[in-house]
Length: 383
Image (cartoon, rainbow, N blue to C red):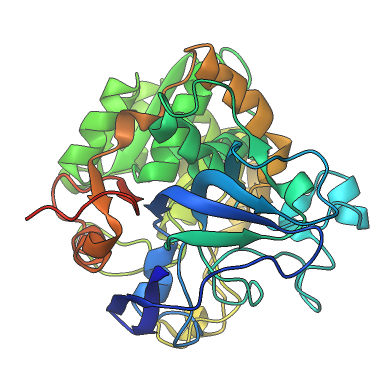
C-alpha cells in the first residue's frame, strides 16, 4: 500500500509499505477515505520528537471497513467509521472510567496510545491506503447514513473537534461565560466552535495569522491579533477590566511571540493575566516532558518559567491533557448529523495522498490559506 513515511526532519515521502492487515481477532481493517494533517504532526515533521525513521504518520483517520477479525461483533464490513486518535483497550481502569486517552495496556509503561505518533506506541498511522484498528468494536465510531455526504465534518471527530471541545470542558465553559482562546489553529477554532455550541456569551480568539483569525470571526468569535498590540490588554478592554471567565490554551510548547521567536511559557502566562480571578483554564496544546531541540534551557527538560504567584493570588484553576475522544465523539457526531455543528468550515485543502509531502511543507510554514489539510488516498493527484 502507499503510505506517508517519516524519514527525518522535514523529510516525509509517499512510498510503498507492507499492507496493513488483521493481526488479532479483535482487529478491524479500514480502507482510508480521509486522513488529516494535524498541527501536532508538525512536532514530528520538524524533528522535535523521537519519532522513528520508517514510521507511517497520521492519527486523524476515517474510512470504510473492509475486513474484521473473528472476535469483532458490532462493526461490519462496509461500515463507515471514524477512528479516535487515542487507541484504547476498553477494559483497563482508565478506559472503563472514560479516560481512553490514558489507556494503561496499549502502550505498556505509558498511559496512552495513538496511531503514528512519537512515544505513543508502535501503531502505524493512517496517512496511508489502509489502517489496522486494534479493538475495533471499541475504537471504531460507526457513522450515520450521511457519512459520505458530510465526510469532511465527520473526519474531524478523530481529533480536533473533540480536542477543541475538551479544551472548553477542562476550562469549565458554561452558558453565558466569556472565553479567551489562545491559538487560531484547527484546535483553537474548534474550541471556539464548541464554546459557541455551549452558549458562551463572548468568545475571543488570539493569534497573528489573518486567515485563521478570519475563520474565527466566521465562527462567531472576536479576533484578537497580538501583532497589533498586547492580547492581554485587548481581552481586558473587552471584559471591562475583569478578564475572561474561562481560558483555553490551544497552541502548546512551540508558541511564539509577535517576532516569531519561541517562548514555551508565553501563552500560559498571558492566560493567567487574561483570565479573571477565580477563573479557570483548559490546556490541550501539546507540552512535552523533554524538548532537546529547544533553544530554551528550561524547555529542554520540559519545564517553563510559569507565573505561579499570580496564578495562585488570583485563585485560578488549570486542567490539562489530551482529549479522551470517545467521551465526546458520539454526541458531537449527533450534532453534525443534525446540522448543529459544521467543523468542516475550517478546511482549506483537499489533496491526494501523493501531495502530502508538499502539503506538510506549506502547513509547517503557516503559509496563508493553509488552515486545515485533508488527504484523500482515493483521489488522483492534480496535474
